[in-house]
Image 1 (tube, rainbow, N blue to C red):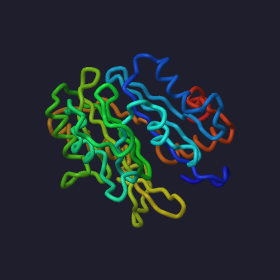
Image 2 (cartoon, one colour):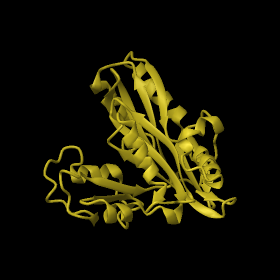
Image 3 (spheres, rainbow, N blue to C red):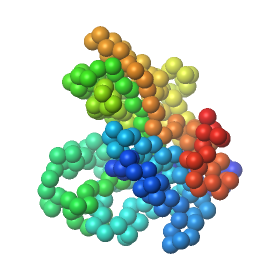
Length: 276
């Protein structure tokens, strides 16, 4: 994203960590993004922390000027045993998607990491696990909960809406998980280049935005929820609600510009008092 007021290019990092139940650990990780060697970064802000107790996972949204985000390099240099695998725009020239890389690596099922060769860093060790780092024009998460405990139904719905399916939603990656006694359809919603879509109304399928003159689109969260609701209804099941993890591109741009201009590193603590 660009910022004319700041005179710099901003980027956003969604940092996913396997911890949510110990708040102090999550916040210490977030605060580590704000300084290096005891010195505070002036153009870095943690915009949001989303923690899910059931999954025991947190998503930390970090905004910074582009030259401040050296995440892959810093991990390799400063985290012993860190093994980095690249995806998306960071995986040049192949640009393999996160789904492709996870399947290739056996991300969720592999027990022996010794045969894997990382793109950056040391050979993988089970103690440290695997780290994936990718880049895309923009990505957010949209999760819709169906009023059912039947995981097979959830998987059918997730398969139907994901972009890789014949009639799926472009840019959407979807999986179904048990969550708080129900089934959640968890979607990664990626942006894609689009020079044709112009409809940006609330109920439209796509929302468009522009970065440095290039047009991008993503599937509207409202449309994703409507499609999940329709598919669930076909099986006599209702939906309970929708949760957005992170921001829309415009929301993110506005929050990032404000936080960095005002030098508010721990923006997540005051966000709801500034932007609603």
